[in-house]
Figure 1 (spheres, helix red, strand yellow):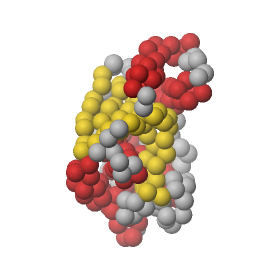
Figure 2 (tube, helix red, strand yellow):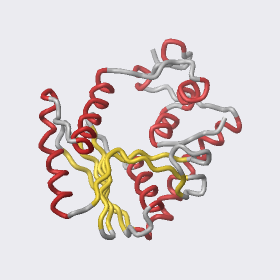
Figure 3 (cartoon, one colour):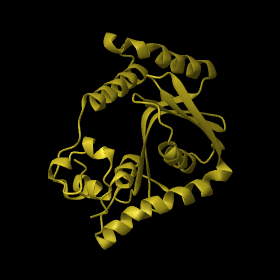
Figure 4 (tube, one colour):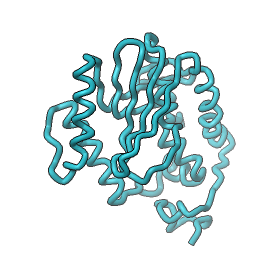
Amino acid sequence: MRLIHSYSALSLFEQCGLSYYRQRIVKDVPKPTSEYITHGYNVHKAIENKLKRGIAVPKELGMYAGVINSVETAVAATNRTLEVEKNIGLDKNFEPVDYWGATVWLRAKVDILIRGGPTATIIDWKTGKHKTDFTQLKIAAISVLKTYVEMQQVVLSFVWLRDKIVDKRIHKREELGNLIREVSPRLEAIEYAQDTNVWTPKPSYLCNYCPCKPTCSYALK
């Protein structure tokens, strides 16, 4: 089976190798769902509809309208290019390929990509509790710097909508090699697990939210 990596897949593997195996390889458990997952999906869809199609934000999500409008206003004022839910694919050498193509090895989905001049801005909307882990945006930064060779730096932002917090970092093009060297071993660990067929379980409090729990002998009860 050819593995296609992403931040969500990497996060699941590092959370629990066995859960990754069951959810991504044999697929013998349903995809996890909850009211929080549904809410996050609805918020992302509402933002996409507003920025891409001009569809008004639903009343029940009106508390997010201000931050959405601020993105529109900022982009319009600088005449930069705005892309919403941008899909970027890279092959095993971290070179750009079609997101759905036969050689794609790593996929990045960027909530907001703003391009103009030598700088790209990446925004990722978060609807859950504030938690700082820039792995997702580092993968996005690698993807953007590899795809748009004219970009000399990327500004990365997590926007925590519920807590009204913004986490920001900047990575310059000369850091690209270091970013790849940081991410590569973590992705290759998944490949090694597949090659050896060893999917290590990691019981933790997260078992309570895992769809494997009812049939997993390692799950914390």
